[in-house]
Image (cartoon, rainbow, N blue to C red; front, side, top):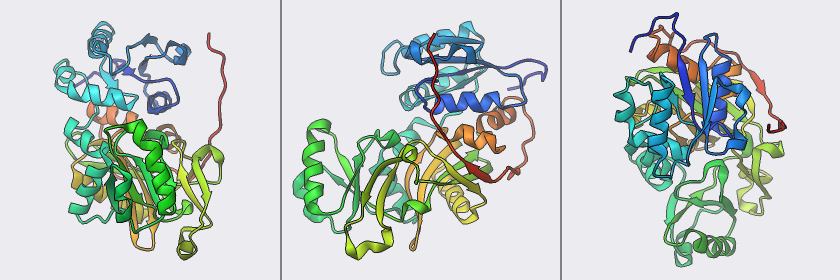
Length: 357
């Protein structure tokens, strides 16, 4: 794909409302030195901050049968050059139709559908990491309360096998009684679906969100690590006292982070190198986000999101602008230096209010 540098690119970002990664991509693109024409779309008209976009549109939900047809309409009518997904349901739908969009000469930085499914299924991902010798936290499928007797590694994290973004329906159990109560609570909600029980590892002071950037040919570009600050309630989904006297190494409190990350960006070389290795072994491309903790037994990865992160705009503030770098490298054919330098420091977040016009 080749473009004259004088031509302004038309970029469509979907899922731009609700504080998800679509909104993060827009913020990052606006920090670029390139004067992109940014178009925004969301399924909720009230979530669209229209002043941010050249044009904005309302799309059906990704689960709607007309979603891809309407998205194609927008792409064609507005001569879109680059398409970024902004939510996980859209990620899956667009990935299924990736050849359709690429045939229209549109750059769509998305992993293969099979890779997305593998990463989004936490049990399947855990088994894959085990097979690659990467020693993830112990994880088992739990479909009924009779299987609780198999658990011998408390405390545990209980979460859906799929779809737990932002730590939705994620819980901690510190003994079999608590776990049985959680199973009885979750089973009617998920009905025939299963959820997993995963070993709780490390402390909240040693949790990292890591981005690894790979081009479309599988070549490594760079990586970045943020050590989360989990002292702020904004970044915490669950905090409970650690009642297990024999597990004092886990800290005074057991913590589950929320989807709102803030904290310190520094070199963190060991963490970054390990996450780079994981991504390369899994064969993932473009922007990949990994959640892990450093423990006395090594780095433990408990989640991989093969998409842009909720920290995309924070990374861009430090000079690590993933959407911009991919567009410049893959569309504008610019040379991007591997392991390019970016700033280190501390990032904080707060809420922002606005009136919807």
